[in-house]
Image (cartoon, rainbow, N blue to C red; front, side):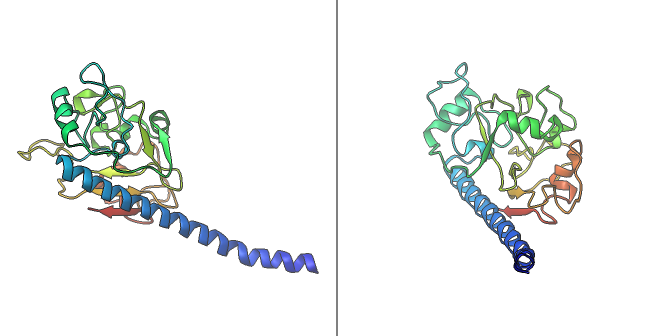
Length: 230
């Protein structure tokens, strides 16, 4: 009888414990995203540029061929590669690191997690459909790529990479550029896939479904996604 009572109590308490654990993870993800938003605001205020999330903790791999490796500044913005002159100028205004990551993965782990179609141009240099992806962590220098092998990429409490969408995919001063399928945005977006680990309100997610990660898809930022617009 004692064993039965204990089993019944366990069945009653376990769901409550699981729910509290999940709520704690959601709270942690919200806190992470809030810290990323503050860090990005500071970086933008200092430099007038937006960067990949992995740049905010100063772990970029420096390209000693084009610039002094002692200059602790990013090699790429959210959407564009930086020239040696631009990095030298950036060194005067960059005041990072702007944040630290609670949990992160390596660039190699990120590549294993997401196929090339999720990147803005894949590691092989392909430009379609990778141009629509939100992740500018790749090697195609024609689309702002860089050697990011030393980067650490922040992940949410469920182990999925946080995503960052900058204000405009091709944020040229003239307003030109970008694919016809891309809608222009003036705000930034930070996203976690949330508890179910898939974009938006999808219940399943195919690794080859790059379109689901497009901001224009209407999927990102719905369902149990945790996000913040800045």
